[in-house]
Structures are given as structure tokens and as C-alpha cells.
Image 1 (spheres, rainbow, N blue to C red):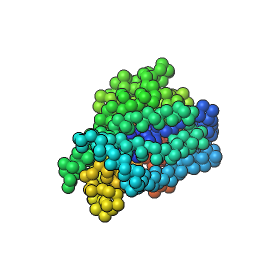
Image 2: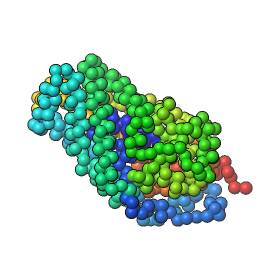
Image 3: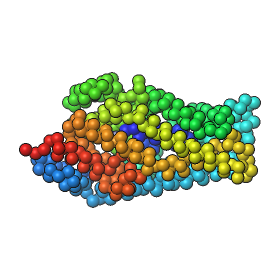
Image 4: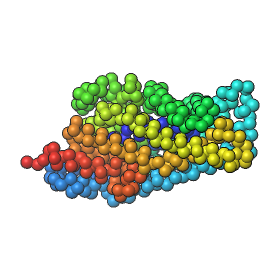
Length: 445
Ligand SMILES: [Zn+2]
């Protein structure tokens, strides 16, 4: 069900550069071996007879499904998800604080000068400062990363790793960021120097180029660092899954399962990659904790993403958002650097030392753009849900699977709250869509 979001998180983190090295939030989900999967225990079990007796009216049927969640599970889910709203604000505030430290403090300015003395070639200096920026941001954001990615996930019973295993993965993410980040910074500042007046256009092209490369390479070179991807194991549903995939133009060799249970108890699946590397990936929690109709409903949804080319579509849509954001960054950073440049020992935006300034402005703009970016992904999720219903024809399997996702996503937000904060629709919206489909396509006799 979840899906593009990891790729998009990866993309945004690359462009937002820095800061995010701490890695995609998805990466940080961890699971304690001893953790009790609270939410799945908290869903009242039912029989086929219960499903057959559900009211025809979509809203009434949706409420019957949601009523199976215990009040404790609902409260816990609300607290977890709403805590995320505050965390996204804290993350931006932290980015601003880190940028201030890197621009204004003496040790950071000394480090910048040290990078500038490193080698005669400018590109060496830019690469060195890029690496310094990645490393310093990672270190300074480490306390929040630990809280967000380890402590909090354990507190909610969704993490399965020990601290050592989790931290090992953080170090691997840092290694990847140190490899890619400085190259991105070099490309960015090459464009800024070459086109000082309209560099935001060139920077958008650079960002898109990196995103495409990352989308293509991540499934092959990055994600296998963290999880093992292998062909689907032999199970009764395997043939149905592969038949649905084949029928929709997804080669069987592009359907994988992976050991997400290494890190988390969450049930999910995704579509990742681009062109030759695109594939449907089902996490082992989904395969082990779900009934056949649930699995087929989820697979139908993922095949929908694949068939509708959602990764390519989101690239274009996010590209437009990023272009607008960078245009603002170009204007604001020029204004800020001419006002405070002396204090920051910054000659102009063309100086690679302006990197923390660009990152700070970009992170604020992207925070304000959250309702737009979330609406882009949420819209595609609704499309994939409808595609999946038409394909798998398992509205009740879909509704059951969605109840499980309430573990980490608030079930019934207000309309404005859903628009602003939800990158996937809420369980209420999605179950309602499934029940509406069922009422029209599988009416009771
Ligand atoms: Zn999806």
C-alpha cells in the first residue's frame, strides 16, 4: 500500500540535500524483537458471515469496519501520527538551527576555509565542502534522528532492531550520502556559477537528473544494503499474484518479497525503480500477517502504481514543485546573503559556503509546500486503490488490510487535516472507496 513514498522521500532528501542524510524516514522504522504488534491484536476478528451482513451503504459499512478497532488502538495511532506533525516542524527548525551554526559560528567558518585551501582546483574545494556539510548535518541532527527513528518507533512497538543494528544502518545511509551528496553539491554550484541569474532552472534540471539516477540505481545498489529482495516464495497466492501482474504488463521477474521484518512490524508494499529497474515489492509482514484476499488487494494496488507509471508521473509533478521552490530559494538566498553576507563571511550565493543558506530556505519552502506534495501522492494513492479494486475485486480484503495500516496512520482525520498532513489517504477514505466500489460492483442480490 505504501509505495512511492519511500522513493519520494529519498528524492526530497537528496534535493533538500543535506539535512536529510539522516536518511529516508522509512528507513528508520525499527522493530523490537519483543515488540507486541499492538494494532493487529487490537482489531476485532470477524467471520465471512459478518462481511456478508455488512450494510450496503458505503459510509455505514466503513463505520462498521472502523468500529472493530479498539479505542486504545485508535488513541495510540492518533498519538503516533499527530506526533509526526510536530516532528516535521521540529525537523525544519533543526535544519534552520544547523544552517545557522554552519553559517555563523567560528569553527564552521574555519572548516569552510580549510576546505577552500584543500587543493588548487575549485571542484576539489566544492566536493570537500559538500562532504563536510553532509557529515556536519548528520552529526548535528543525530539526537533527533535517534529519537525519531529508534526511540519513538520502539515506544510504539513497531521497531524490531537493537540499537547497534539500527545505528549500523544509519552509518550505511551516511556512507551513501557521502558518496552522492558532494557530487550533487558540485553539480549544483557548477550551475549556479554558470548561470548566475537563472540558476534555479539549471538546478531543477540537476535535481531531476539526480532523482532519475537515484530512482534507477537505488533498487539495485542501495536498497539491497538494507534488505534482501528475492522472488516470491511458493504460497497458494503466488500464482494469483503473478497472474495479476502478467495480465497488467508486469513481468514476473519484477515481483519481489523482502525482509522488512528485519526492521519493522509494519505491513506494507511498494513500487520502486524506474524503467528497467521498476518492480513491485511486497514486504514479508504483509505476506505473513494477511489473508489471501488482503494480499491480493494490496498487490492490485501496487500493480496499479506500476501500470499507471506513477513514479514517472510523480517525477514530473515533483519537478514542477521543486522548480518553483528553487526559484524562491534563488531570490531569497540572494537577498539574505547580500544583507548578512559579511556576518557569514560569504561573498555571494556562488560561494559554496552558501550551501547551508540554500538548504535552510529550501526546507522552509518545502514545509509550506507539504499540502501540495502530499496531495500529489495522495491523489495517486486513490488512483491505485481504484485500479486495485478493479483488478483484484477484493473490497473486503482491501478494507481488512487498511485496518492494519491504522497502526501507523490516523484512521479518521478531518478533511483539512487529511489534505495537509496525509501523503496517503486515511483508512476512512480508503475503506469508504472500497465499500462504494463494492456497493456498485457487487451489490447484494
Ligand atoms: Zn500506494
